[in-house]
Image 1: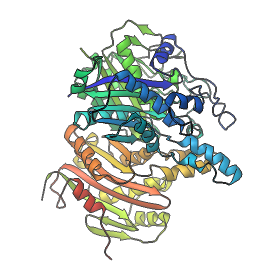
Image 2: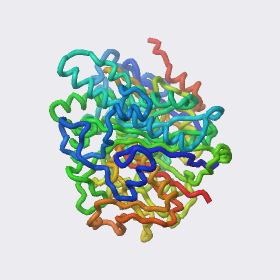
Image 3: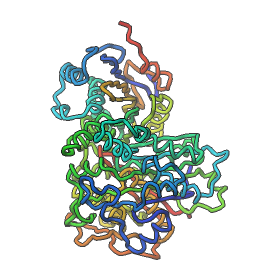
Length: 397
Length: 210
């Protein structure tokens, strides 16, 4: 049973939809910059990949109340685009919405707490109504008319890779015909101050896979794919050009927030995805790296890639220098980049990389490559708790 | 009795009591969570100082797993990548989230921040027990045994998982409970319970009689 990609939707610091995103990727235009939405707060000197729209503006795009969390608004915008792109009418099809997030409605809770601490009053208590991660999913599923299966996954930075993997299983096991899968995360002080406390944020623009990398920049956004069964794929007006051929999740079992030096979990995730796809390592044309820009991640991931691919490491890049690290959304957003690489015959550059890492025998691509045949893409997402996931997207022959 | 794919052990921690494979192993009703956790830790004769750094959700799942695996080791029987953990809960890591948020009023604490994700609790279990296969935490309003059984069965059926810790564990508002069972692809353990949602519910919904 094959699982096909019938549609995609994305919003991030480099674009409000797929077309804008592609333009930014081609132009090498990064979305990292100074914060405006959280300005005046602690840690506001740190650069982030922020979407330069207010909640009110996002709400208009989403067709939802501006009182909902920013996570739900971003989620709706990207999920709607993915649905529209697929052209699927879900009437009569068993359809699921599998969404991932790490912060849920934290942004609204922070707004509530600011006034609560100042005034000691429970006014605006409705701001915490949608705090939990599942609420963001449900707020989006309902207007989309999705009733068969709605679920939320929260596994840190691998969350939305896991939701895509999970959706594929629901289709393969015959539970669903169609699944919209991915994730969304909004910027919040909670994550910003937390990652800063862990001392893994770069005070300048991040430089993944650079010898002198200093850490990551946080980002926000949402990315969703519409996955369909073979049966549904056959009936689509627009024949799918990409399918999901491999996926795996593994645990590094090393440290709460750091990867093992040799990237054991990373290795197992990539190896598992390759095994499922039945592809040789030489068949992978591009790796969309997790590549956060922290000393630890890039080394562990790089070592694991070397162990798998040996002397012949495929072209690779981290796109987090464009978007920032969007946490629970990055697996979804980077799934879209992986699919775009296949569709557009492009490999996107790893921006700002000047000095390749001395421990590695390979270095990511630093210039946009166009007109290249990209048939198979490996996309990595690794999260706290040692949660490692890899996905493989392949061109439909 | 032995089955293909069977529950070969389980632990239930609720209302201040701990049951392990049909036997009440420990009880300290009405104790505050911190006291309950420390006493259970001592009763199990564990030596794992990192326990004292953990947040409450981690302590809950850590102790549940210590009980579940107290008479066996997964690493001896299985390859690390053949073992997994999938649990669900209602409140994710809310207890750690609140504590971290309170700390962030002064200076955000990295030691608290690391626990603001339920899968860090999974990570702690993986580190302790050498588990490197698939792991996930799902968030549901209430324990959904149909989902749980379906999901972990799928792991055993499709990706070569041979043993999976599965169940439910929640900590919120100074209340906690954990129900973990070990699902094994093959077992000759004397406690072998057929893996289905009815049996899971029966174990989870146990009512204390005394």
